[in-house]
Length: 76
Length: 209
Image 1 (cartoon, chains in turn brown, yellow):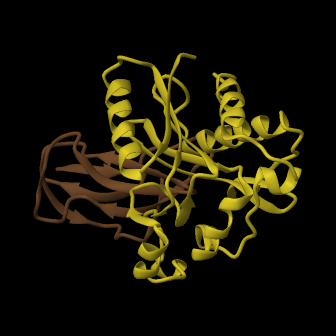
Image 2: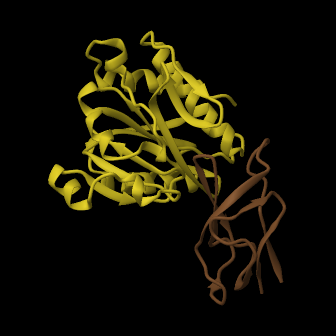
């Protein structure tokens, strides 16, 4: 099981909004493939998948905000 | 800082997008450190990820009649207009070689624009909490970027020509009720896009390490 964690996006950035899941739960994803798009201010950031596998669960839905370090989803 | 500069001239949005992807690959493969595409666009409205369709104030049919294209794109931000009276620039920067900081990248782009406008004796400023550059309380430049593998794409536009401002009435820019201005409107004299482009390229080379 690999956790998808909201990474550091800058010195004073404590949170970001999940703006788009490229992969839906139950779908396969390759390691480093674009998995989820995060938005902060007028910037979007494509977070790559930390591992190959199936996206098992999404914890933060599109439009919701999470803090740096929060788990956004799980890859199995 | 080594930047590969490409001047695309007046282009359709889809052609500049293709050029951006090509530049992105050159930067990703390490063929060049950073790239900067500069251009002006045939009239186009782009909708970012946060765009709400009610910020487009006319129907798609009306846009077609006016010869304005419409694109959904993956940059941050809401809705914006690009046209032949603007300098649009796409910095494809490898942030792995600079600072991995999205907000710092936005603030640095604002500083480059402010430095460019200062060369034309225009006093521009940042506004806390709002991305973009402002003159006399009106927005003169917009920014919206995307970052993939810590390489940036999409970018910014500076309103230069006065006669290209009317198309902003087709939208609520950035989803806000804000006033838009141009360099010509403030300076009350003709300004060539090429002049601004030349200064902008000099200013972006001062990018902080």
